[in-house]
Length: 245
Image (cartoon, rainbow, N blue to C red; front, side):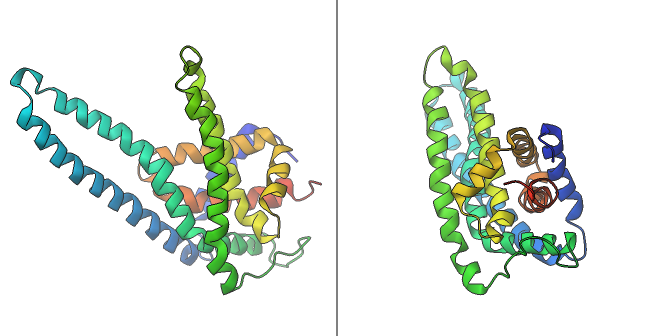
């Protein structure tokens, strides 16, 4: 069992390499399509609205302040990064959650083709698939509660210089918990039990979450981040955490 930050990060990259496997392609395709539609649609909608705003701003700005519309575009890009991560990623996870649970189950079967894994993961029913988004919404409330302290910290003078670090650590933890929920949830663990388990492996958990965050922030790879993280979390659970108390 390892508590290594780099080892946790490595599981996300392993998950990325597993995506083309024949037994996983059908489970990856639907979440990937959902991600593509949400990210693409969100960027298109935001860009179209900004173009209207940009035209309106240029209409009343004096010539010597015309450069401000470039500042507007810079603010737009920064805003899109934040909105995509905190809004579209969360929405994509809620919608794709049922498929991610099935993906985690498939990966676990590939890791243990003989079924010898204690305790054996329960078969997912369509009832479980339908109610998975409700569990995701409960998780979302927990994540919102976690996001409030770093947000408040960013408004405190002098102290706010550490806010980006706090945001990064907080986000890494939330992402690790988000994707560990699929293999652990398949084993019947509730959110509280999952948190207790991951706290026993802080560096492993934060390494996994940090690499997931990095993938989300890289164009193109961000479309693959969700299924890669699901696969990576399932591999991590089976290879690192299965003997944890």
